[in-house]
Structure formats: C-alpha cells, structure tokens
Image 1 (cartoon, chains in turn green, purple):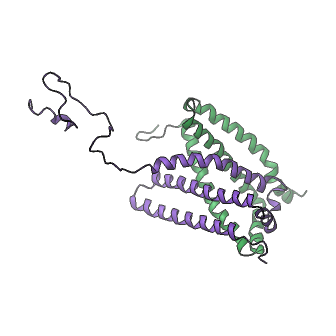
Image 2 (cartoon, one colour; image 1 turned 120 degrees about the horizontal axis):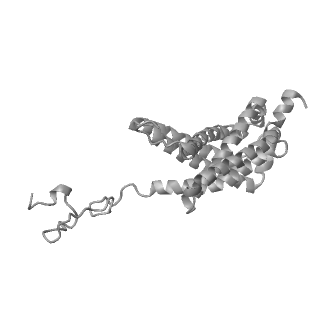
Image 3 (cartoon, rainbow over the protein chains, first blue to last red; image 1 turned 180 degrees about the horizontal axis):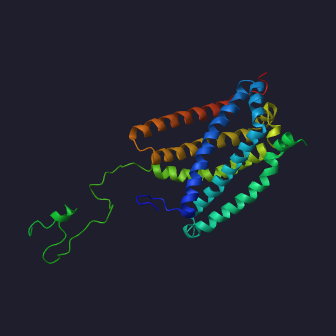
Length: 126
Length: 158
C-alpha cells in the first residue's frame, strides 16, 4: 500500500469502488432514459424510432451491462444496509460480499437468454 | 508558570479544576459540546441524506428490478417496447404511480450519490461549485420533465 492513502484494498474497498462506478453509470443512463421516454410527448414515431436503436445487437449488449451494473448496485446496496444496521453486519461483510457475488453470477447467467436472445436471433438467424 | 497552570492546555470551561490538592490537569473530552460550541453547525442534512440513501435504496430495489423484469425480460424483452406498449402500461394509475415514484427516488438517490462523489474528488472549491450546480440543474430538469411526461401522457397524440 502506498503511503498517504486511505485505500485499504481487499473486499471492503473494491466493493465500495464498484458501488461508486456502477452508481455513476446508472445515473448517467437514467438521465438519458428519461429524455428518450419524454419522446412519447413528441410523437409515437419519434419514440419508436429511438427505441428501435435499443433493439439492435450492440445496444442489447449495453443493456446486459446495465442489468449487470444495476444488479450489483442493488445487491451490494442491501449488503451496505446490513453492515450499517445489523449488529453483526460489519463482522460478516466479506461473507456477505461473496454471497452478493454468488447471487449476481447466477442472475447474470439467467439473464443471458432473456436480454440477449433477440440479438442472437438477429445476428445468427432463428 | 506556577500561578497560571492552565496555560499549557488552554482555558477550560468552568475554570481551573485542579489546584494544590488536586494536581492532575483537567482535559476536556474530545468533541464535547460546551458553551463555546456553535449551536447550529450544519444541521442534520448529511445524516438525513445518509438515511435517505438507505431507505430509498430498499424501495428502489423493488421498483427498479420490477421495472427491468417487465421491460427487458418478460414477453420478448426489449423487442415488445414501443409507443403502444407505453400507452398500455400508463393506462393504469398503478404503473403511473410506480414510474413516478421510481423517477423521483432514483433521481434523488443518484443525485445525492453524485454529490458525494463530487465532494470526494473535486478538490478545488470552485470546481465543486460548478459541478454541483450542473448536477442540480440537470436533476431538477430531469425530474420535472419526467413528471410532466407521466402526468400529460396522451395515448391519442396522433
């Protein structure tokens, strides 16, 4: 560890870094998402045109990334709440992080087909 | 030196608590509220913000994961989304309230998170001021725009 830093490494710091990074990314998406949804007040065509780009394979991959970021932020957020409010939370913070990562991996594996299935059919034919 | 024994630790509230019979110097407990502590410092805003992040976070887990499930996972995922789909969902006050609550909580939760990030990394006061000004402007604009869209949605716009 370099001198003069508060960073301690390991599970605690890296989950905190990942929580920040995913949080900022989700917030920027949210801003764009409210703007694109506002197009329903312009015309059905304007809205459908923009949503059509959301159905392309490349954006489908971004949507999978969005799901990944949101699921991590949600699960780790519940862990942060447990650390803050559960009397044994700080003692089990590492175990809870690995539980979060386990649930996250399972949910991400389960999300492959629902989120990316249509992109695969478009790219490789159905 | 022998007469002014308080000088080494500064003036202590209540005057000198020690003398010839009680020679140990009295040291105030750290951060003890004394008569000289300002009454109103920063209020409880940071504590309220901290609590809001946790409470809104719990609600958002339900609202956002439900939203993702409907929009990206069920009934063909993103392929089904279009103006007609939005019109169908916002025909119900339940989903209007769901989306309105999600918009407000998510924007405030995200804005407060970004406020914390700016406070942590922008070291110059001027940079912090400008970044937070931009953040608050974008947040108010987005919340008002989204609220307006939900309340004024017209399925027969064309």
